[in-house]
Structure formats: structure tokens, C-alpha cells
Length: 290
Image 1 (cartoon, rainbow, N blue to C red):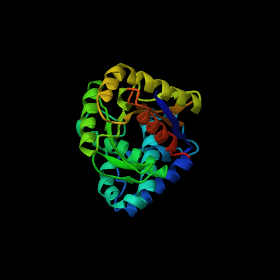
Image 2 (image 1 turned 135 degrees about the vertical axis):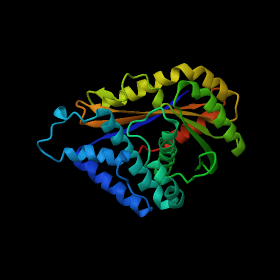
Image 3 (image 1 turned 60 degrees about the vertical axis):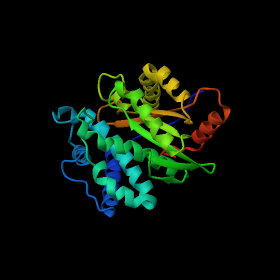
Image 4 (image 1 turned 45 degrees about the horizontal axis):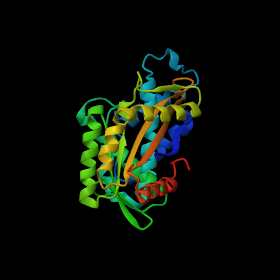
């Protein structure tokens, strides 16, 4: 029986968002890293600053990019949450990876060299959410290990860039967990597989965006569900986590918003202990907004 985790996301005005960007800059600086000109966060800030001019109208601005605005809002919220949550406990590891985390294109693309920053962002976001939920986390192979009910549970996180990667990366992750203790979780980000014609979703309200994220996650995972369940059933892992983060805007392109959806699948071979453990983990995890 799959278990949904409460959706998480955000939308906010330019003043609040600029304040959060200033916070990220301060925390990055304290870790010995700077937001460089030309980076994705700097490009996002440049778009935001235009709204400080009361006469600015994005409809007449040929350089206004709704996709860049939406992805920038999502990246800022996640990177700020990562730094604020993990710096007190994992400053050494975060300091080493933060320069890479802040790189990458404004909008995800298909260049392999540009995937590493957002791959790391997915891993660190999972770690930050677990720490935020009060769980002890260590950042080590396979990607992280957290403690729940006195049990060390390894987690392997993979971000897909094509449908062809889903089952091979799942098998790879299971192999990594086997080297740890076999009884862990695999988390797959399916963001890049979303069946939408543009890299953002237009919604009437934040609730509508939440509903879109859940529906898109089911649609993205459906072609792989049978094979994924078969692979996990023949392993020793606790279960599988699939996720998407939908970026878009509410009403108008200059009101960016994003919504995350996570679905937990215990191994579906009728093992009540595994099912109960996964359900308890889901119950323990808090969304970033809580």
C-alpha cells in the first residue's frame, strides 16, 4: 500500500523572496562560498530586482522568462532550507559541496556536466528534511544514513534525466544499499520525466498546483511501476520513494510557485514489518514548511 507524504511547496512575493536570497548569501558566505555573478541564483535575483521598480511590467519585458522565474523560486527555497538546516550539524561536508550546489543552469537541461548541482540538491534536500524532522542523519554512502527507532537506515538518492534510467538506476541503488546493510530506502526524483509541454505548470491556486504535483507524480511513475515493484520485491530493501517537484506559477507568470509530492512504496510482498516501518517513517517526516 503506497503512502503519500504531505505536499510541500511555496509561493511568495518579491520582497520576501529577496530577503530569503539575502539570508542564503549570508549563510553561504559563512561557509566560505559566494553567490557568483552569472550563477542561477544571481540570474534569479536580477529578475526579482526588476519588480522593485513600481513601473516595471513583465508583460512588456522581452527578457522576462517564466520558466527561469519558476525554477529560480524553487531552487532558492531548497538551497536556503538546505543551508539553514544542515550547516549547524554538517558544515564540513556542506562547505565542500556548496560551490557545486550553487552551480548549474537556470533551467535544467540535457547537458550531463550540468546535472551534478541538481543531483546534489536532491540528495541534500532529503537530508535536510530528515534533519528538520528530528532524525539523526550522517552524510555517507550510499548517500545518507538516518536513524529511526534506533535503526540505522541507509538511503540512496537518484535523480533521473530520462525514462530509460529509472530501472537501471533503481538496480544500482539497491546494489549500493546491499553494501550498507540491504535494509534501506531508494529515493528517485522524476522531475525531468514530467509529461508536461513546458518546464512549468500554470495553476489557478496553490491547492491546484498541489493537486497537479500529485497527479503528475502518478503519471510519471506509471510506466515504470510494474518493473520497479518487481525489482524491489526481489531485494532486501524496505521500500521505494518516488518524488517530483512541480515548478510553475499561480495565476500570472510573475507569481512563481512550486509544489513537491512524495510517494512511499513499501516492498509489496506482504511483509507487515517492512510496511509498518515505512509508514512510521512517513509519519515522522515533516515538510519544510512545518
